[in-house]
Image 1: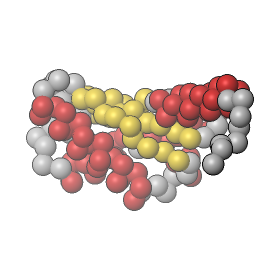
Image 2: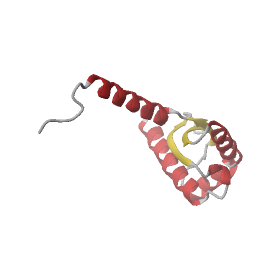
Image 3: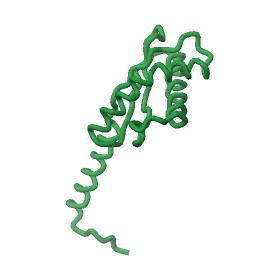
Length: 123
């Protein structure tokens, strides 16, 4: 990935995050939602937007449908905000990395508590 593509990915991620915070009129997007990464194609025609959603399974599916429905609106708003020659088509993908990390930390804490024969620290 070129340095220019990486800068565009970061710019799109930041702007999409701001747009979603400002224009969240859709009740399906009411949960904790964050854009974790954006991957644009080399020709900048397509962008995969990785989204982390802290909600139940059904709410996640609804939120992804809402994002897909709003993709043209978001693309148009990006066109107004950015000075790119071409604004990529947006496709939203679910990203579970934050949840996997939280689960892993929880498991590590359980192991730490089981392995420690003296749960209280001595002064």
